[in-house]
Amino acid sequence: MDKALEFEKCGLMGMDAIHIACAEKAKADFFVTCDDNLIKKLKRIDKITILYYNVIDFASREVFKI
Image 1 (cartoon, rainbow, N blue to C red):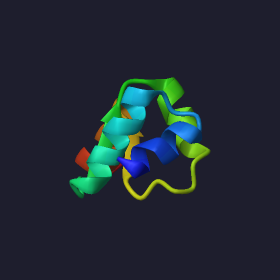
Image 2 (cartoon, rainbow, N blue to C red):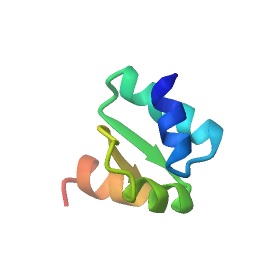
Image 3 (cartoon, rainbow, N blue to C red):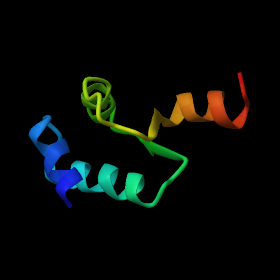
Image 4 (cartoon, rainbow, N blue to C red):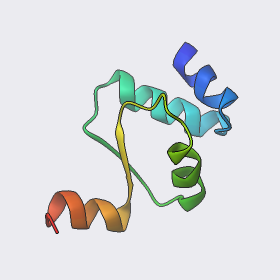
């Protein structure tokens, strides 16, 4: 959970930090969220190693390859 604490120090809320850290640990291909504020915060964090999308961007980029 050290990674979650790092994310929390970067401005993420506790549960958001845990979700991102778990997704990275599980080597998930993507992290998809409807939370636009979370997306804005994630864009400011350089330490994120997972691809993250809002639902619309995920559908257009990964599902329909637009």
